Image (cartoon, rainbow, N blue to C red; front, side):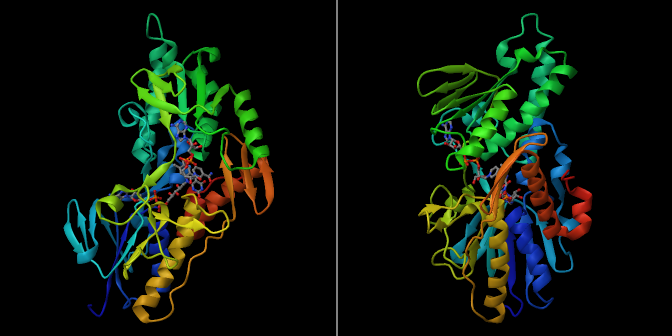
Length: 401
Ligand code: FAD
Ligand code: NAD
């Protein structure tokens, strides 16, 4: 190994950005050559994407140039797309640059939509929770409103919006959309009663596993805004005309927003890591099993919660905490020292429901309405603080009131 080892960080999302930020703070100039590689020249906050998707926020507010945030004296940024990791050869294959060698690798490529084998999702539904993906959702929704009044016989399915999955993504999205519908109806001269919104969930409840009282609060609130829930009704197919449910019911819609969960990035499977739905069950020090120099964090990693014996859900909260441990473990590998074991410290879960509404559990406290909304915005702002201090928080942060 060269005297100054090479660290590659793949993906400039929550895991990758926080790893780069922590390395820049904790490493000396002579400790390592560090390159952060990501597909776009900007970092985007996946956790805000339901807002631009529904058009309640401009997409640019969710993103920032990577170079404007990282410490460029210590971290080199390369815009490129990772195609494969050759773990035996300590190389990554990039679309433009070709091969790049590493001594240590941090893989933080995030997730892709899970379909659970439902046909027609990629052809007919909107499933990309990325900046470009949500731009398409927003433009499509507005286009249908515009189209409605230009047709001699406008069809009901133009203004029928289906959300697949009442997990946190589906609920946050419908929260934003239901909040925006009155404004869209006014702007496009469409009577409100022409709009239909469905949330379709396979499990016996919305937000399975979450506090039932808060789930009821959220459902009542959304129903009052005109949302209809279809619970315990798995979608079995998406077609050009809408969705087909397992019980045979069909809902005609030109807009199906897919939010039935995620799987780890396809590069994981392609690179031959043992995985479950694209996620690698990592060791306690966050290395891939059998690999001395490859860490996997964020949505590509899988960790079992020993209390529930179930995997921790893939969240930004965990990705950021893992990034802190990884930066310490990299330093220990390079300079000598004990590697730390990672244990998630789950502070809680807060979900926005559009406008000034939200629900959440923080510690063992339940939060509703404006207090949950305040907490959600503080969580969003805290991330910006971790990444870029007060400057970034003031520039990009949300007003919690
Ligand atoms: P990401 O943050 O997704 O980053 C992956 C990065 O890799 C991206 O920059 C991407 O462009 C890049 N990339 C992808 N493919 C390639 C490639 N081939 N080559 C190079 N670069 C590539 N979690 C919470 O904890 N709290 C929340 O409130 C919350 N809200 C959410 C709301 C929505 C709408 C969604 C969709 C998710 C939400 N999540 C939330 C989950 C959270 O966003 C993810 O768990 C988190 O983003 C995972 O971080 P990551 O670093 O693994 O991946
Ligand atoms: P999820 O797995 O949390 O929810 C997906 C939902 O889709 C589940 O309720 C599932 O039963 C349902 N589903 C699956 N197949 C279906 C089908 N064929 N028809 C109808 N319903 C179906 O996934 P998500 O909401 O995409 O969230 C992904 C990750 O991001 C999770 O870990 C989540 O916790 C996290 N997240 C967190 C927040 C927050 O903390 N505010 C917000 C969004 C996402």
